[in-house]
Length: 173
Image (cartoon, rainbow, N blue to C red):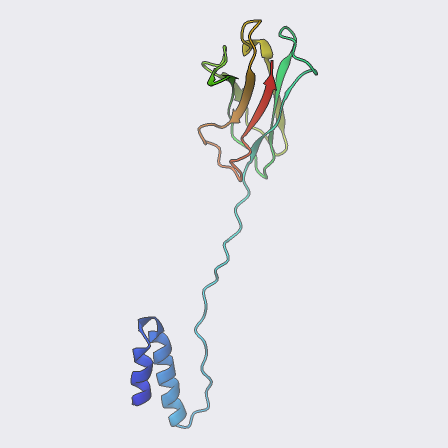
């Protein structure tokens, strides 16, 4: 009887073990030779994520080594790097210029350039281009340009990785 109370005082979290020990003790006293079995444990491993689409901006670059306002282009390549086809979505290309100490939108970036990205099969890609002259300040002014390409800005496509949906390109002029 004393053993029963000692196990019960251990606490509520050990209540099930106290009952097991109490019943094992009673069986042992009756001469039974049965071993105490541990209660089943719950698996804590998470199920693998289901295969999903994964849209990524795989390229954001300028054509040429120098910037020619008449001919230079910004190239954006979009790819579905996931394991399932991706629904159609949008691509935004915007620009911010830093002229110390201020940051402001580039000309031609309000609203940003918008592209329709059709549904993409696994490993399918599309390439888009924007003329650099759309974002440049009038001649004679210089600054640091930050071009951003962002896919699926409203988060409508369920993806494995949401962090590869945008890319940043910086250049000076």
